[in-house]
Length: 167
Image (cartoon, rainbow, N blue to C red):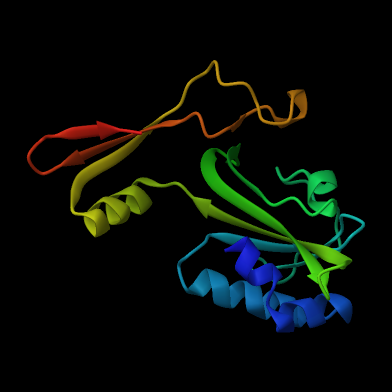
């Protein structure tokens, strides 16, 4: 989702022209689709231009889990992060104008709630989906990301007949 948003012409233009309210409206529209829980738009200096989930909170330093240095180099990021007492699937992507001029970053987050997993299981015709996290999983970016997990989480899928598969 972050990659799709970061490449949209209207979002690139809004970054280029510092149109905070337009970015907020795009973020809110993405959140209203129920695809994600939070959307943040960050300028090249690491300042939040807009949050789709909080119209009045902007112009402050980004303090979220995404590694801004990697994003400035053009690297997308996708990982799990523990924040504000819950787990989130986080996806972040750089915004480029003409594929070369770095304009900022889009970060989208989806809360991993029981309702989310129930809906996902129903969509796949499964009885339930559960994630099991390993305490021994090394953080993806060293010590600065305490509470974050790499893709080493185990997913258990169970169908209505009780058959299980692990990924």
